[in-house]
Length: 111
Image (cartoon, rainbow, N blue to C red; front, side, top):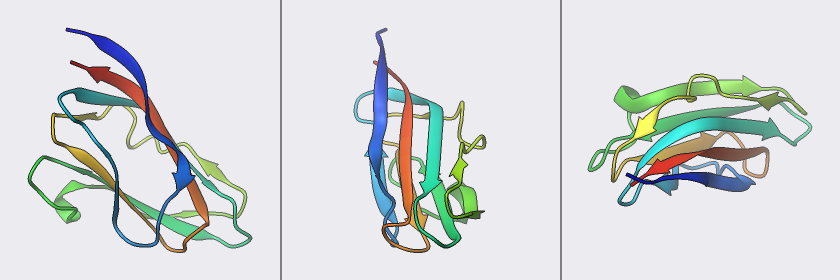
């Protein structure tokens, strides 16, 4: 088995529609850090799903539900740290407003 430190989701804005941000392709991905920073002037919300292969984002795989993030706040998403995605699993995010929340995730990919 090989272990590679990975920038799972490079820093980017979370869209205001359900958007797949990362898919574990041929690896198991273990999430070590996930941050969400609100760079807007108003409170915004973030929803995050960790979706198994061949499923869709739904209440059954929602990890963070509409978490309010104040203007200027960086939320470290402790609910996500330590979770793993098997091959084909993916991360979906939803922000309440576009260009408001910058997300970034890092971890380890195991092949």
